[in-house]
Image (cartoon, rainbow, N blue to C red; front, top):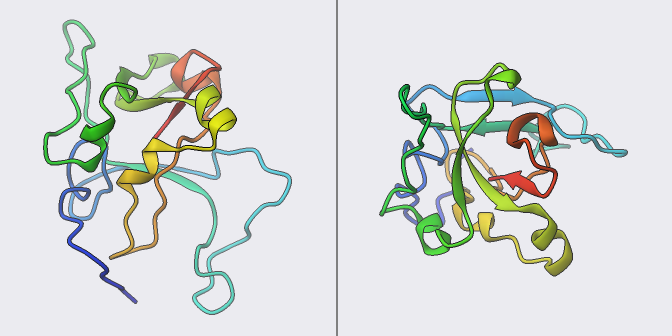
Length: 144
């Protein structure tokens, strides 16, 4: 069931946003937790299980640079702290992720990645997730 609370076209099918009609990287259950959420159930567990899902651009093959946050994205308001990063190939992923300061997010409780959350088409909270050093190469960084 879709619940549309506002126009979220600035967060869907754009780089670093949620995929709706485009391909995406989906990493199921990438987070460690002592309280797993279980499987999706529309009545009892509508938020379902954990997965990392993103419309992630591919880095430039020459210099591994990543495109900037799109101007239309609500994440653009935080481009001073959210930085595109080419994921190290050691992770088996050839994509750009939007990094966030995980240490700052944990200490302040302010998560600037939340600006990219959507509630239509799915309830998908964008947050500064701790993916470990495997993706970012730096324990202080998370990814939106």
